[in-house]
Image (tube, rainbow, N blue to C red):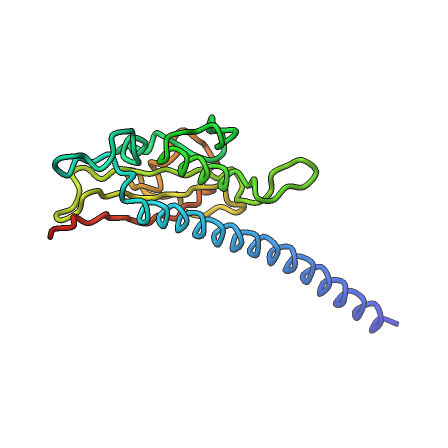
Length: 195
């Protein structure tokens, strides 16, 4: 009889540990999904900028590349212009500036408008925000130099980004919680084309 009770206790402990492991695996899978979404969103904006050289508001002589505000007008060195969750863009159709339209579409993607469920936008990371941070002056032989940053809220605590880094500067006014800020960063340099 005692053997049966010991067996039941061992089985119950094993099942409880298995349930805990399954719960932890679900959280890790969600974190992984969010990181993949963040990388895709960051890469999307990098591709938009690299394929839209004409949307820089940099003068390369006469005439300037563009005469309306371009990407650099929306890229500050402190990352204070934030796109995505909490931005003022509700509809990109009304945006007439081409660079701003590209940024608006990126912000909509960060808000998760591509996928909805019961009226809620669920197609992106939790609290996703994006910034374009201008590197001034640009690197030698670069017409423009940017950091593209996507930040969001994670589910488990890890180390926060170091102060002063692009990951910490983007949406710095948003408190995701201690150790919950997640970020992906890439650098985009638009080269000077010398002929």
